[in-house]
Image (cartoon, rainbow, N blue to C red):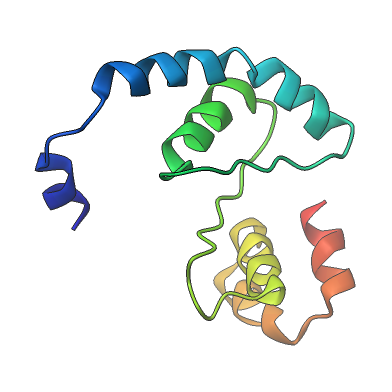
Length: 111
């Protein structure tokens, strides 16, 4: 689907590129907010996924990045924690046993 959508002509290409450049100027401020334990909220028409991926790639270079596609109906906080902890698990068996682990234990594993 993404490949097919990529073939569609993009409207307002110059305006979108200009907006991207303007938003990139905020990357250092966004990083400061994240370091101060604030969250980022981006809103408006269109997907912000490419912008956030660009921000992560260019700015968040001192550790791992967790990408959560929040549009999945079955997504829960527990499933996010389990997935993040599983990515850090030493063995496949350890990763498979994380579903019964408490949220607090999962948070300790990934912090």
